[in-house]
Image 1 (tube, rainbow, N blue to C red):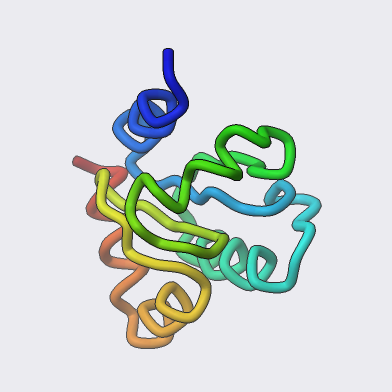
Image 2 (cartoon, rainbow, N blue to C red):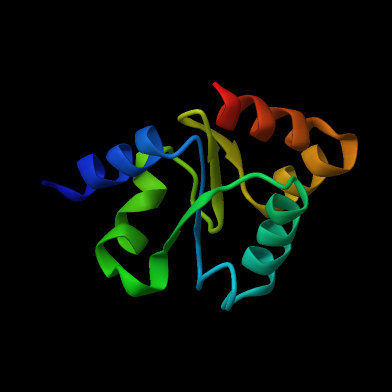
Length: 105
């Protein structure tokens, strides 16, 4: 399976997923850490991919959704954005609704 197919499979199989540096318990950058904290505060299960552990995903994920940076958060198969957008959505209460809707669908 090629790398873009692997990425698509992960995005399709997880209602909420974050591609991040590190893991939710051990984030490896501040942006990933803040993003995961917002997702955890939504109190929904979410998948994650540690892009540092998979160089092929690290190199190709920016091409997948034409988004150059990490982390990248996907909800119901759609890229919602990186750290800043995720935190903005959380502060407005939109992230909580989006993620709850995604996991209950």
